[in-house]
Length: 394
Image (tube, rainbow, N blue to C red; front, side):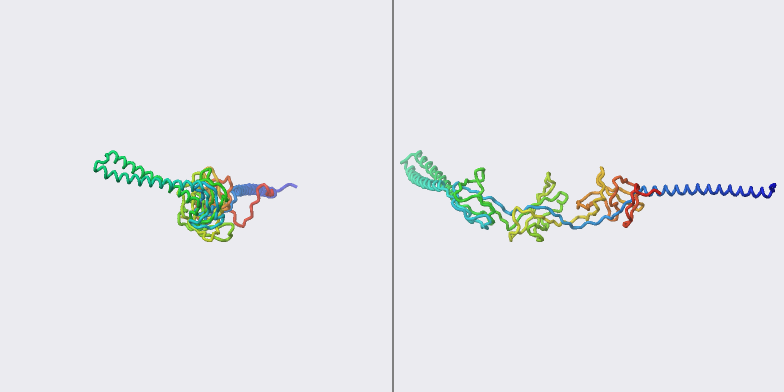
């Protein structure tokens, strides 16, 4: 059966519609792939930005406590040596004894010095007798020279002899005084009120005078009614260590107890080896609870000129240019800010300059983070992102 013209028209129309539909379908497919590619590109760029958490700096305390180790020393501490040679005859004070100034500590038997003193006194008597005789002779010849009974030369000799005898008398008296002082040194007395902390001699021991290599320390006495505590203040804190600053002191043998003191003086110079300032703190020790030579902790309350900001130690970046903090602006752009560090508290670090209280910091910035880089801010409750290597393939 032959086709009609109307049949051919319907066939052509059908094929035309099919062609247009095929073109439209191909166009829609291409557009969909382009859109998907664009979305994939956006997701890739977004996922390439590091996901970070931000924190706010915390204000530091305007007044902070500086705790430093210290050594307790007696306010006055002196070794006691013999001033004359001899044998120790008796001692009157042992370690731990509380003594007063001038109290007898020991006695030395020195017979040689006693005999020398007796001899010196005899020589002094002879010198005095010679001086008196010379005085009588000079007086007698002074009257005779006026009547020319004796020559002027004889009178001058008598006057010179009198002057020599006076000098001999003065010398003899000085020698007696010296030996009398040595005899007085046979009695060893306390130079000040204090406690005997050492006794290094015993009865019958030969002692030598002086503190040379031959001399031996007999006693050591310490005044402990007030004690000195020496500490080394770091250079960074030395400006706050000023005389008159109130100080607290604690010792391990008295847990929970604080002793009040005051910063008395400083060396006014930084030790070039340790870069510290030597400081003396005076503590009242009327009850004797603080022992010289003990270890203590000194608590200094110092005012900060400006309260520093505290940041987590993990937020610091150490670059060749110096320490940096990664701050994030409103558009999530990173700025590597140079900062000046203060004290390190372990988990937190003081920032002196380079940071404002309202800055947003990256809590743990990647080591490779760059200035101007865009980051993604994770919400505080968001779960940790899955590493790309462990994501399931779509």
